[in-house]
Amino acid sequence: MSFESILVEQRGAVTLITLNRPASLNALNSGVLEELITAFAAFEADPTQRCAVLTGAGEKAFAAGADIKEMADKPAAAFYADDFFARWTSHLVKTTRKPWIAAVNGFALGGGCELAMMADFIIASENARFGQPEIKLGVAPGMGGSQRLTRAVGKAKAMEMCLTGRMMDAAEAERSGLVARVVPLASLVEEAVKTAAEIAAMPPLAAIANKEMVNAAFETGLDQGILIERRIFQVLTATEDKAEGMAAFIEKRAGVWKGK
Ligand code: CAA
Image 1 (cartoon, helix red, strand yellow):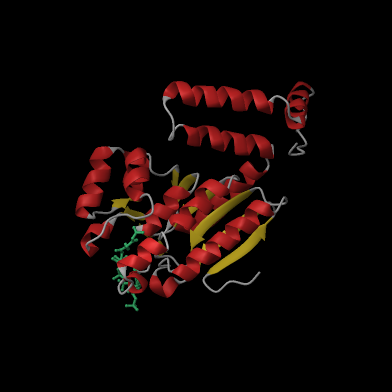
Image 2 (spheres, rainbow, N blue to C red):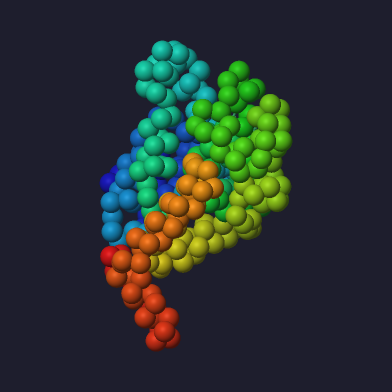
């Protein structure tokens, strides 16, 4: 599979996807969009691949947003007709059941911040900057930023960031719950791939189930969410990996997973 705007490599059971338009700070044009959908679909379909990492090429940006130059002259009817950004969100968030991590190196602005927030969690470099500056362009977030940022950091910070376009640095993002961990830029990809490899070594069905449960917390009330959790837990008890995992614990050995 060959791509123009992204790089894809497999490191064991981890797929590393790199946005590769550093001269445009990895701005997200429609080419990137289509290639990401293809790369994530291939990751999802490949049984040897268990976790993915998405990062940006260069030291300056994960992605500085949707491509403003591409959007500038696009007529409103075309945004509506294409249901602009819908396919991207549904592929990366809904269709991708396997876990993936955003490794944010530098700017994650507008659509870049929204793309990072589609990940199951974010690991950021010390120079990471998050923001939703769309208001300065006369628009507003269009790929979930107003919703996911608010759920991640709360109304006060999300509202301030959307209304002023101010950026949040990595330390504040970690304090605010937007990112799981901050690491030096030089070791970002290595750390993210290491974490992804840890996840990839887990029982695969349990990994998907844990992801589904946590995501359910964003979509449901507490009672409903706890019911979903309990039902998924009960389903997992029927898997061969559950029998193996519990036997391995009792026999003091490592489990060998089948994904069944
Ligand atoms: N779209 C297209 N090109 C972009 C871009 C974007 N979002 N962000 C940066 N670039 C390009 C610049 O035009 C520039 O290209 P040229 O060299 O050809 O002029 C190159 O990347 C380097 O950028 P700068 O010279 O601006 O770099 P800087 O260090 O001075 O500033 C920055 C960095 C603060 C990130 C600045 O580039 C910036 O503000 N970028 C735009 C951020 C933004 O507004 N993002 C939201 C986009 S709208 C959106 O995403 C909608 C949505 O919700 C889905």
